[in-house]
Length: 363
Image (cartoon, rainbow, N blue to C red; front, side, top):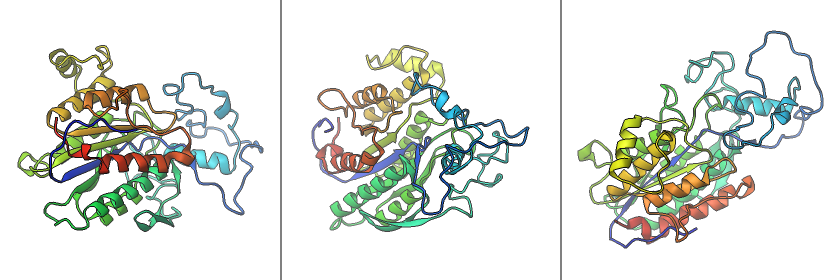
């Protein structure tokens, strides 16, 4: 899906990729000798176990899927095997610890992390060939692994475009991750702005989704962090004065927590009316739209990308229109709901954003 073009200017760009790492949906297939009886063998568990059952932990997500039934996950209760073990690990993600209370278990030093997490000594790293070379990765889970590989492909595209450019004027890239806003889950600069594209690729390999506990899609916080990072050094950021700022966010969910107060959001909407805002009270949506409008006012290019069945594409389309990057039909870039297609579709979207002269535009 082609971004709408607004008019060209010469000069390098600074690309900031901001994936939301809040949701995990699929793990790699079991290998030889691994248990496969998770759906067939019920067992009796000791009493008074942890209350986080498989039909808890936001399984299923009724916000994204209002018609989803709890009968499917409930049918896996008291069944132990590969399938339920994978679900258990994915529910706790990279950061949560099942042996520590939820108020503090997101700390990197708290409790025992599941083997899916790179923080675990039992994490099974493996090597893969990518568009940018051979790298080592933690276990594959979707859509995060497709995001990792597509980001590496994007860095390779930028590298190829800058093979003859001097370092001082070459395009630079950055990666910021966001999920929650708590002490342990605040947005993080995984890779500061750099023209060391291999370093950015390595940073992409380490991205992992957080556990499915609490509010974990703080889109506004991610955009705020990205905007601040892209600001020129004279304004406290790490950007350069002469570059176009390009912010690309990828999410398979919808915002569910904000930083800005309702009064601030509503005041901005009143002063800057736009039909793409939601009614007052929908702060988790309107806060992101406000940040996007402000970034556009700063001559930045914001591309929101939804992927997977959990993305709110209606919101992403509004975000693209407010940002001035929607296509001629008013739609944002998006992928399908098929995990087998995620990587290629996301790579194609990244390539079009990077190679299209629209990324070097001012409004």
